Length: 90
Image (cartoon, rainbow, N blue to C red; front, side):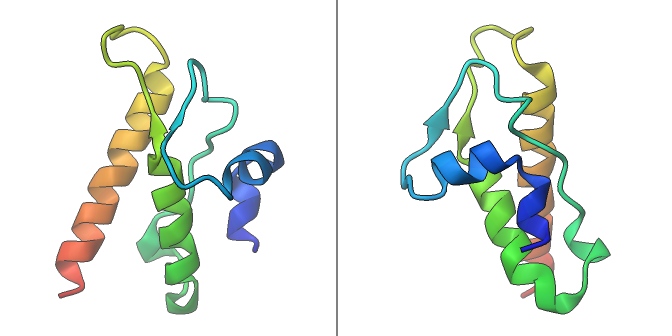
């Protein structure tokens, strides 16, 4: 629950029930950097992993390279971290 506070309340409330990707023009206000999986206790990995997956559901318009660069970078780094975590846990 403490990890869910890292996402803004409006994001979690509006998007927690959706199953498809969320598309927004400017979502940087709704996205916040979550802690690294290696920085939290083992018991919090599942919840943090789920939050990071929810963050990755946000879609960005990559046709406009300058639009929402912070959000794109956050999503990219989160996806890379999840891939690294999955590959190292085998």
